Image 1 (cartoon, helix red, strand yellow):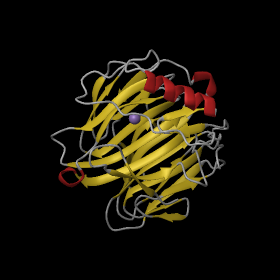
Image 2 (image 1 turned 90 degrees about the horizontal axis):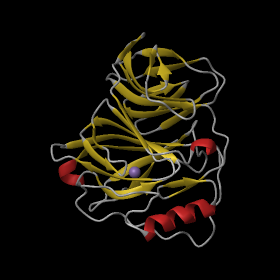
Image 3 (image 1 turned 30 degrees about the vertical axis):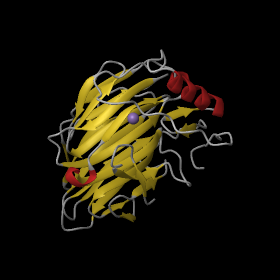
Image 4 (image 1 turned 180 degrees about the horizontal axis):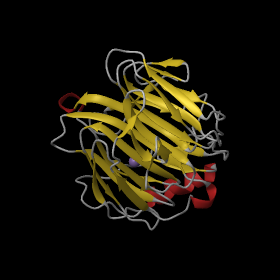
Length: 300
Ligand code: MN
């Protein structure tokens, strides 16, 4: 699957490459949103400056290759996203946060991922986890940094609400690496740089490859002369139908309408709270489309 370019919020609207959701696929496991950006020269793009905005029904997973992002949220967390360190924020019923690349950042390069929360946990409380995984050497030439779930003998301590995998993989030139994977999982591979063959499919930078459940191993080959880097995502197929609109995930048009109203009606609602320390106004929600939002399943 190839990306489409999407302008992100902010004064100069930095552009991201979005590979999930797509017309043909809504989810890979509970992963429901894959944005890939950079390497961007911050002097040209203005960097990242996303004013306080709400989320509901999801977790955000931030992973950087280069740069630094300052995070503030209505749980009261003030944290930094740095290369090789995962920040996972659980919105549960509602949270608000801001994300701003720091003045020290000259190049910004990373991914922003979302995980949908299952029905029984989608109204859970706000939460936040940080983890800096140690690199694990891969037989065949490379290394993995496992930020969610288990791979290559390493397990992330960050809890999830559905079975999930998230790992950065680096592959040496012409390396071929075979990884044991959970056969109940479906997988996606987002290539950041280099040319990678994933389960037989050649992928270019910014492509997202897909592997269906039912296999106990997956082989990745770097077919190029330089290091390749990719992010491997996985999870058990998420069978609920969801409605994704703006920064909200629900199950119905009413869920989304209610979340939008609660965000727009108060600067400090019980549902979303307030973000302290962001120098500027929060983001207003866009207008809803004139027709009801329809739930979508895994593949359409
Ligand atoms: Mn956000």
